[in-house]
Length: 119
Image (cartoon, rainbow, N blue to C red; front, side):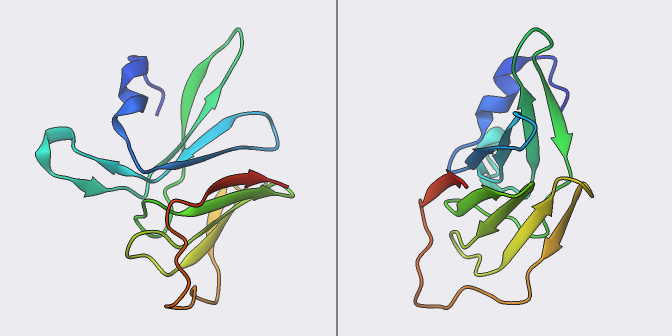
């Protein structure tokens, strides 16, 4: 988000994160109690670590999600499931856009609090 205040990035909870192919750390979705609204977020941002440390805003996911699974694979980030979100989508790092996957997670699959993986 181009944060001036580094504490702004810490308002989310139940989010997921992974390391992108260029070394940035992506923080995806989550839940915020900021302002007491209790919003589930579709937001995505990436932290560049090092001498020029800063946050940048990535395009938002198609769906708000929290407590979901994500994996960084072949210059893409795949997200699936989460509380109340059976939809899956993939972020194409080269195109800089989210693509919705054609299938939902089955109702009996619980991808809550699954964390993330780098493949």
